[in-house]
Length: 234
Image (cartoon, rainbow, N blue to C red; front, side, top):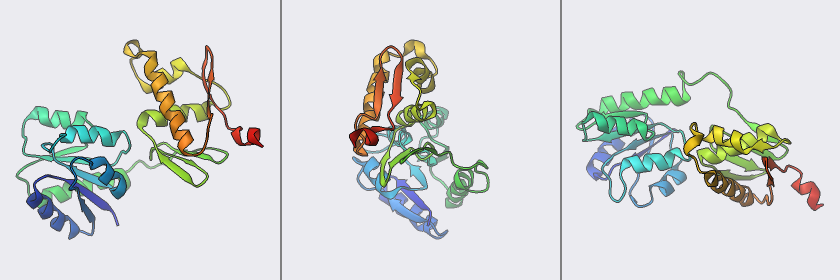
């Protein structure tokens, strides 16, 4: 069953949306802990998110940016804000659509079905999911997931891009400038230490999977993926 997650601090509105959406066969999760939206999101793994802008602690723009670090699921903003800049901000922060309050529930359902078709159904891109495999290591770029044997970890977009480059170039070296170009369009304003930080995070992701020393630094050149770690231990 496809899941819809609602992030709305007005419980009456959230329950109203929930009852209407459930009539169409969707499972609905209402977020209640507004300090830990990401924990609820990771646990629910929804197919689509309905997100208010005015929320306790952090606004919807902030949470949408956090979600975009881990997921490409459709995000529809629902807000009483009616200004054009609010809608622009919603899209620029990773949203896919915008609904203003007060709203008609049928409009909400039409928007949900439209985004579902685009993301998963008849309007979705007609190609197979990209999967990169080297031995027991598998990267799912569209899912932002990395798997080693039976262990799986979630990646950010930057971590996914770096690991994808390492896998594509294996056993060759992925140059620092090549990685910078893949991660950021304008390299002029990027401190190279930023790449070092991202590489460190990638190494931690490999360690979570039980893979130590998976990313080798090649001085003066860049980084190389070590696929032979198990052979070297035996």
